[in-house]
Image (cartoon, rainbow, N blue to C red; front, side, top):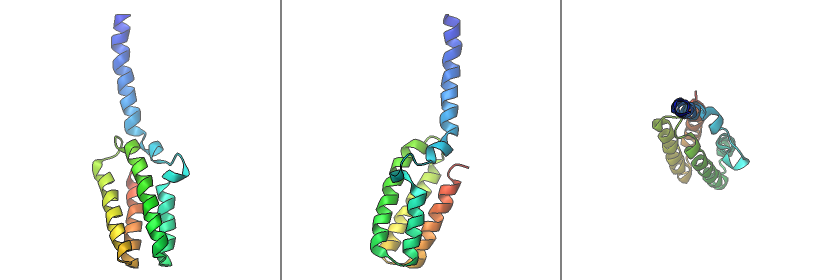
Length: 121
């Protein structure tokens, strides 16, 4: 029995670590509508094209809160640089929305989409 336990504990531990490390694609998916970063970004793109700056402020809040809900789930399966890239995009997006700059807002939103797609590939 002691020999069995000495084999099973490392096997179960390694299996759990492998599942966590490879589970990022599943963990990235939203579990409810308040965590759907990609949908919020798409809505923001539509609002940016028509220059609806008040709506973009609420969209940015939704994106930021959804992103903060996703980070704890994916932090062990992605590189820190990828998380920091999206955080930086959100900070620049806030500045471009505050300055009401349509082109930089669209650039940042498209870069968020690219970073999101590259997050777990």
